[in-house]
Length: 335
Image (cartoon, rainbow, N blue to C red; front, side):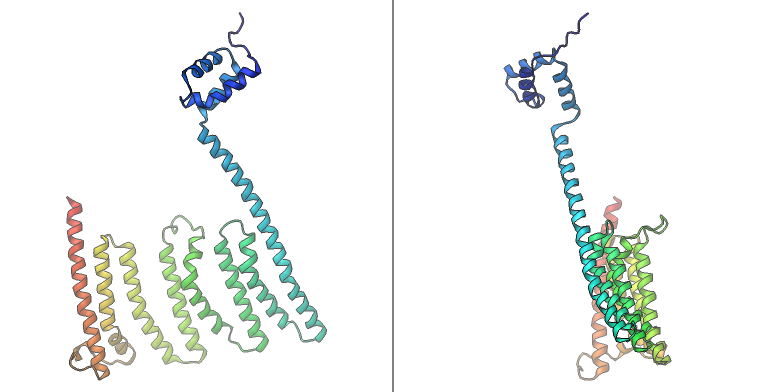
């Protein structure tokens, strides 16, 4: 028995295939609709085309084509960026080679060459690495930049025999960490047990480098008293920062209650932190806020006491309002 579906003329197929998208969207005229339906009964080729159209909508086809074009464009951009990075790296080699030749010809040693090389590495970290890195460009750029900067410190320290590499490096790492470490830790893949604790790791890292900075700076000059005082002051204020961090990050409460606790911590620490530090460092027992006298703004003790009192009272009032708002919100959520 012959198959009822036979091949039609190419001209008819072309006309029908032009009409298929309109037929699929049901926007063609009745006569065109009848023509298409009649033709589909007898043309296997057009029937297959229509089935493909039903399985893959026009929007999907356009999206696939667009994705393909974007991928090709992205590939070209990556290739161009890689070539640019290679060119810049080659250009950065020029001053390195020139310095190397000059140092050898003058017999001055390679100290200057090492400093220039480290400097070019720093430039490369800011220019070549972002161009050539495929993923996590910012993280790699920061890590390479900090490493190159430390190399500069090291070679300059060796050049002048100053033995101050740690004195330069530790405070620099601490300062850069405050700004850049959150970006670095965000781009690092951590084990599952630590993946949701990046903020905690950042706090620990910054706290560690703060105390290392105090120890290194004071230890470099053998200032034991300064080291003790610095660590105590840092501990008092870092403790407040940690309390605020745990409140904001881990306390199971609404934002009003969290804000109230933060305001309360900030106001209490402002009012009493100086007295606590005085006691821990010098053994002085005093509560500055007791000297409050709003009619006297001339003596230092009264000015400090007045400011502390204003901050403390304002903080308590604001915190109380926030606690009430938080309680109302919590009660409303339970209903």
